[in-house]
Length: 579
Image 1 (cartoon, rainbow, N blue to C red):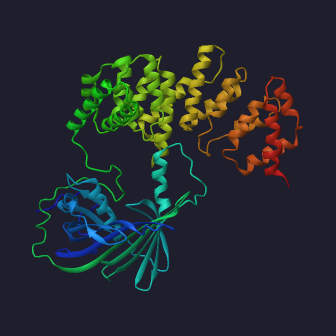
Image 2 (tube, one colour):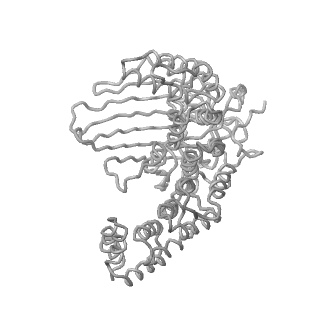
Image 3 (cartoon, helix red, strand yellow):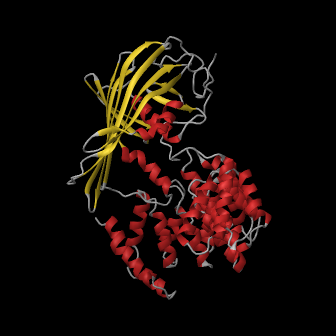
């Protein structure tokens, strides 16, 4: 029987890079122990240990199969180490499902878990397979980017006799995960409170089959009261035997294709509930929230639970829930409607935008929801498309522009390719372009208000389509009669890449006839992407004007920006340009 393939990159013939022979069963012993210690504490080391036997065999052109057996979970205390018998159900879950995976060129390129695989059990298997990853080309020293259970970051390989040493800075691996947690966070330039590293010693046969791996993961954290807290995880993988399989392929015949995934740790934290029970639970949560009146803590906990329940629902299930629960509780409160923006999943957002299009939400509620949606960290092209549809509604257009532009920026930041090639993004940019028209002229209050929203949206998105930049340049130079528009046009460059033509900003800054506030705004945007040519031009401009010129210009407007201009000159400009 030909086993179904899961890895789309699997070649059509037997891969020469496959070091594990077909018809041979490789049996390893895997053990890992995690312990935490406090410096200066008398409590000693406390932690957990896991030990099991794992069989690996080749089952198809580039697929292998992993099966765990004889698993033992132990608790470590200062006095003794003993097996935790009540973890019997966990042991059964760990041993119950086989895992199909691809291993080529020393890297695990795909995992194909079967239906019913528990998330926590899958993460343990990810950790085990990460130990098998190696380099077949390392000699004295080599650094390469690698993805494993910790994430994607650089691994350094160094050959020391018969042992290959692999080291990883786990803080680098975790940085993208921290950025995803809050999209507007700023990384510390130097964080000395936490240190996290991994070192593995690997020994292989000449056939590139792994014989033994010893890994030490150390996480140290400096805390205020407890001092230094260290968590250390020691893992060992040893080849016990490699023997002919009496019935090769028989164990894999019942395996399906599986679901393609990778080695990265899954944060879902447990088995998924069935969609039907989740919808029923969400309905129960809504009814309970409507019945709660005084216990604010219980209301908060139940509302948070509702939000996470909604994240698991598909769009069709959410629509069914809306039909069942589209009613207001006391004080005109609607729990489901309040939870949808906080949910933030693609299905939740699509339902919200559909309700707005149909006019099922009043204007205040719709505007409030759009403001909340601007903070979604992982918008999809379908979400952008739903926002594009709302741009046709005049009463929602300003808020849809701001929300959509923030989502476009978040989508483009995480896109591996040029996001401007996505039809949904192209449609949004075209709307901005058409709305700006030929420029930002006119003094009609309604038109000025509309242009301010459009320019803010351009700044939020950070997209620098050539046609859009050309219109912005006309707005920067041609809207001096309405200072708010001119400033908004200047600030719309704030997120654009440094390859964007900013010559119009330099032109504004160098013009002594321009208002001081306009020149300061132009300078701020120029300094986001300084280059030698720009710095020389700024220095030449400073040398040709009096120190009080900016202050005098600002006093004519009756404002207080003048002293700020003086500070910029003496503290920032001269700092960069003094000889």
